[in-house]
Image (cartoon, rainbow, N blue to C red):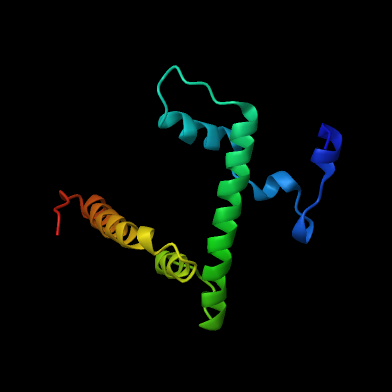
Amino acid sequence: MDNQQHNTAESFEGFKENDRLLPIANVGRIMKSILPANAKIAKDAKESMQECVSEFICFITSEASDRCLAEKRKTMNAEDILVAMEALGFDNYVEILRKYMQKYKIASTAITNNTTPTDE
């Protein structure tokens, strides 16, 4: 697909294709952060990763959204995402993400209360 076709391409629900993707600069920055300082990343590698992570987020979010709709809720929360991940077979990640969320909440509360966070 050439650039002009790419820029005018419409996807589901009338969004431009790039509107459904994470920003390529952010994807590239995250990829670069785990590689050696002198490593180079090809543009097509960034684009492939951009497509994959964007699709993954849509996949998980869609499942979480279904849960919210079934429970007649309008707001999705972290637990909805974790339950969706579990339902879709990403169980290996759920436990560590729950621990991360607990630590995040403790740190956020400490910042709000201007105290020092402690591990529980």
